Length: 414
Ligand SMILES: Cc1cc2nc3c(=O)[nH]c(=O)nc-3n(C[C@H](O)[C@H](O)[C@H](O)COP(=O)(O)OP(=O)(O)OC[C@H]3O[C@@H](n4cnc5c(N)ncnc54)[C@H](O)[C@@H]3O)c2cc1C
Image (tube, rainbow, N blue to C red; front, side):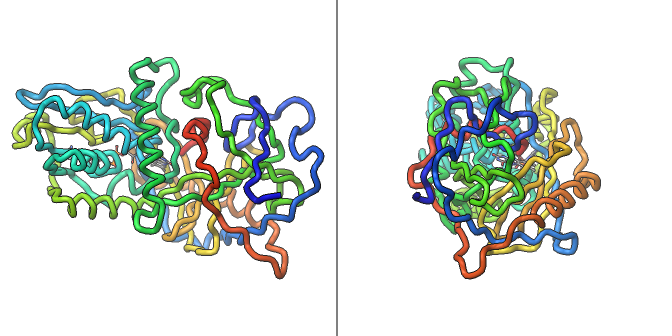
């Protein structure tokens, strides 16, 4: 059977990372009457405390009411807000940038200031340049010192984005456009230049048919419209994980340090200017020479625009010495309901992730650090090594690009 043959598991089998509390009734509906396939051979990931090289912290700019994308006035200027993307600011930035362009165009001018140099700010600046705008980015910090650099950075357009009861048809329409435009753009950026690539993700589990969890931001599309659930369920003996099954999917991954630096270079190459500057008040913004100002300050809008609905959701990643031979992501839910996960990059293997709502501290949380690393040691040390004399299984681009809706099911913390 072809390596990419999909095991379609029916409408009830939403793809989620993790299995806690989601066991479907009855026996597994997968791998029913087919002979076992040769085992997937994955390079073992070496997780140990002496391989830890750094721990990073970033504060996701979350709003229960979702991101803000609207035009306003600041004296005679057009002020466009584009902030509050929660755990999806790497995923939605290009599409949000397009929507900013749509809001800016009616002003009939071609000069804009973008405030902020994270993923939303840089993508917005590039989208405006593509429409012929002369753009200056003003930012207190630039890569590598932005939240975007601290991201886990998958294409996770619904992650930590909005409370379901706060959605409106207008917001949903913006979200759809943002998700679709961004997905297309990221596909075009695959390759070493931007550090964007397709990667195989394995969810190691004893339950191959996790039931959909109701509510939440995974419901941004009605169930019947969720197409392209391209999950491949590997049965016992077909994968190296210490679980019965491993669900394999192809995902889009971004390496933030490569990606954001490349966006800065592109922005400058297209004639953009970058000014390091912190704004303390709207008055200072109003004094800028540009007639259009785009606010991409993320959590900075808490004080700069007095948006008290913004709340930080602290995220922490621990990074191990790089292992170039590891080119797959993997995660598992452990018996105590915590997670073990790895996410490989050229600058290291990212272990774990976290979400601490309302925490403003940029100091690593030692308890979370310990749990993330110890969980990864406990789980990944039990992976079976590759069979002697066999080739390693490498991540491949998907034969058919998964429909954008497939990524709306991504429910774990990112
Ligand atoms: C651990 C972790 C995992 C994540 N995983 C994912 C994921 O898998 N997928 C995904 O899509 N997203 C993910 N995210 C979320 C994503 O990183 C954020 O949504 C995104 O980085 C937010 O971008 P931002 O522009 O709002 O913030 P930033 O990147 O911090 O950019 C804000 C910019 O505004 C500037 N600024 C702020 N205030 C002022 C001021 N007063 N004056 C001048 N400049 C100012 C800053 O200096 C900075 O340049 C994750 C985040 C974390 C922390």
